[in-house]
Length: 198
Image (cartoon, rainbow, N blue to C red; front, side):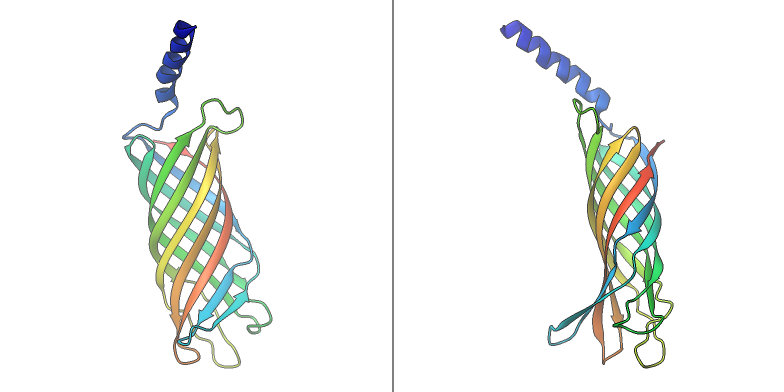
């Protein structure tokens, strides 16, 4: 019995490295996303907050990762969120969107016995967001949101190099509208892509 158990454990130990993302591996992951009702939030000096929904939209992006150790990738990426109309409570024909450039970390976990998923992974992103606000107006001339910090967190699954992930991201910006407020552009996106190993 002990010999049989030892043989099984040894077999698992020998097979595990074959599924690992090895140190020195590189990958490029282009992806397309669906952004579910983006939210533009205003926070005033007195801590009052107001939220303005925008229409759902799409995004395009790509990530590059280099695995500094097994199953831990460090990389960079870019993500473009297409502009979408803000709802009627904000103003007529007002639009908002963003392009984000970031560095990223990607820990990967192998699922050797799972028939449906090869790997799961988590994502952390930190960078700079360029606001694509074609028109932000509210009964006064159009103005643009300033650019600022960007961050995102998410998780995904991989099967046969196809990835599906859920991301939450936030852009910070300044918009001198009522006298100077901090604005955040918040997004929840479902991304689908394909991993190319280099």
